[in-house]
Length: 346
Image (cartoon, rainbow, N blue to C red; front, top):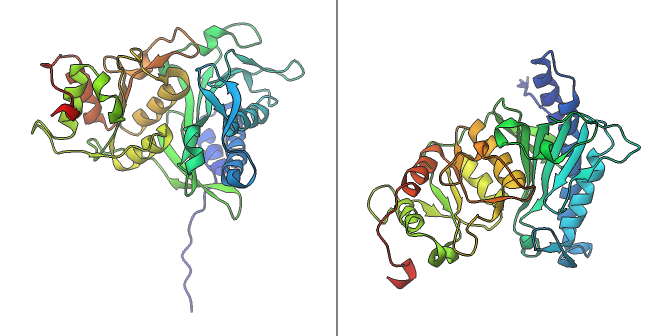
């Protein structure tokens, strides 16, 4: 006689419903937004998988609000997300890294009480060489009185997020999200078209193994940033050396470090004194996730989630990952170090 062991298969829809039951006051609107985003992720994953066969690789002739050449898949992913969520009556407005202004809900659709901010396809410049890319999203509650979303609704500090998440389109497609009750990961089973719970209650190690940073900017860093990077590598003898792992796709680097422990850093430099990464579309949502997983995120002087945004496309330096590694950044960047020669000059 064969004895069968029962296993629990939890879809993202079932998980969201079970979490919603823990909050009797919940209206289901936030759950609906997460369902819609999961659907959009499946559609984008399909486009990414077939990109090389469908003439959707490469750049368009357009420049986005960030001053970057738009990739064909950027435009497609942006459109997929907008169309997946604009009709549900749950959102009052959206904002995308790819668009200069607020995206209003069409007049023929009802407005809701939430705002969605998103980066439709992070790392898309790498898609031509088959490097993993991702989608990042953030949800905040509407705080103005009118029916439609306004700039004040969008420009809220990250600590006011009610949900955030990302999707990584790699060897498998995985969605990680939080609503402030821990960070949970779901892997897409393409045979049934469902996201299944694969990584419940993700916890990032307190000190990490990996350092993700673009060393090509080393000559443009301030001396205290150079000293910090030397510390991470163990070159000053103060800590166990970290291994450098840098893909160049924020979602891919962040995902590896979230699961294995480590730190992603994109410091300010002389060409980008305000940093490069977008506060609302990248830093805030990932900071919410990493804190829920026991990690931390800073701009080098302030907790990311406490920064008061002043602009829809505001940029920020970012140090994010294992808590003790981020605390090291906060400590060392607050205290200037003696001038060092660039590594390449030694």
